[in-house]
Length: 115
Length: 114
Image (tube, rainbow over all chains, first blue to last red):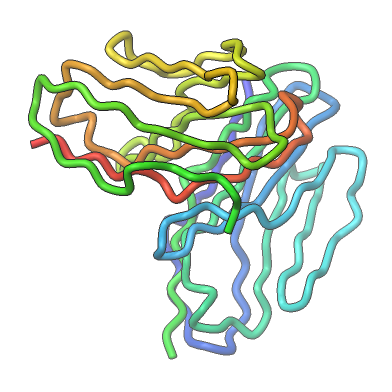
């Protein structure tokens, strides 16, 4: 069965600090997909990135970067020079290629960025 | 804007009542998913439809039911409501029912049962 763990319930930082959100997953499938979503205070979940299990290249998009490491079953998300607008709940999710294609979500990490 | 529309935004009702939540997927998306978000349970998958057919079922109570219509909009029916059903209910859509498809979520319907 697939499982996603986001051990950090809440993180509080001051603007311009770098912050890393951890995501650890469990799956028996060799083909799977990992996702990050952002839920701002307005409530809507917004898709940020997808990674497949065969692509371990790290990805950078502006201030956001993702580190995928199969050896540690982790898919961590780093925000560089955080801003108040980054305040949100961030969810990591996993769907299996061979098993259940329905995404399983972690419990989410609430990021609070203080001015 | 994700393109997924959910109505109503808020719903306040009493225990024992029945409500219907409505979802219109993004244009072109055939798959609709329903999730329940509560503080203690996180995001829980309820049910998924693809092109009008039920494809997957999660932790959906027997008091809850859903359907997807020929125009692809979906409705989630919650009956015999209990206080514990108070939560944020999300609809999401994707083009396919494949594991590589990211989900596009609506704004959610906040249900309060009093």
